[in-house]
Image (cartoon, rainbow, N blue to C red; front, top):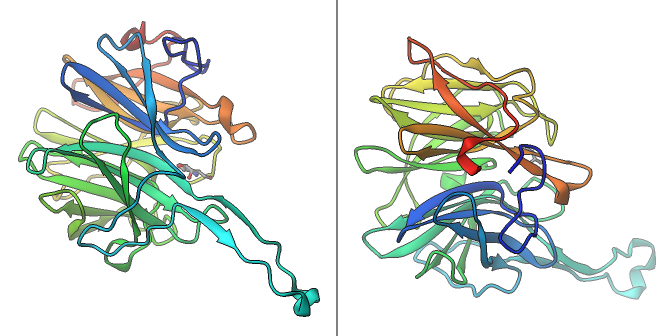
Length: 315
Ligand code: DGJ
């Protein structure tokens, strides 16, 4: 696979797993991500060698089953607008239906409930003003997920997001809030079906998007982007002694466009850490591709990436 070119699945079709995530389970790595074609929201691929990716299914779509958990979240997975009656001819608003936006899906396995739990960013499909988190669950990693709805964690806006399980075994949901100005860190409930506690807010007014976390040698690192729509910008890294600890300053990561990409997630493969980013094509979203680069560390433990066309991870 070549960075910036379509990555192909075992059927020869471009992999649609944008803003994605990988989960290891049962001898396979599952790759999840956005798929905005037709009535799809989230697609799933799997591989046992990181090179051959088998398409497994559209695990969340406009037709997914829906049900409430104990949290009574908004279950709408599409929108419907009724036209106003003819008597109000001058005010007629066209009716219609449409898809919502489900972005940056992440899937966790919950040991307690034995469920696969998906967290993502939800928007109403017409603008980015709902700014909600949403969840769905399944008994298998690649089965049809049941949608449990969208909500604002503790009433807060929630856009670009990620999840992270730390070495102490706690799992966190991290998302951009206050119109992307700040990042919020929430610890999840034991069943991963809700946020348990709003632990802290970090990087006030820094407008960080696309957070992706990993832990190495007792430090927790976060890679993120600045907020410029679909256009790439200077990625930054920062670190803390723990997710809930004091986060340090932001430092440049990659070049001024993060090699024309935006962080999606970090993949640990053996001893190596890989930055996986989206190379978005805002105009032609469906031709968006990926950039995978090995994260290296200097003598002080500071992470950096250098550009290469053919990442060893996938080749
Ligand atoms: C940047 C975000 O990181 C993407 O996930 C997407 O929401 C775009 N903005 C939309 O402009």
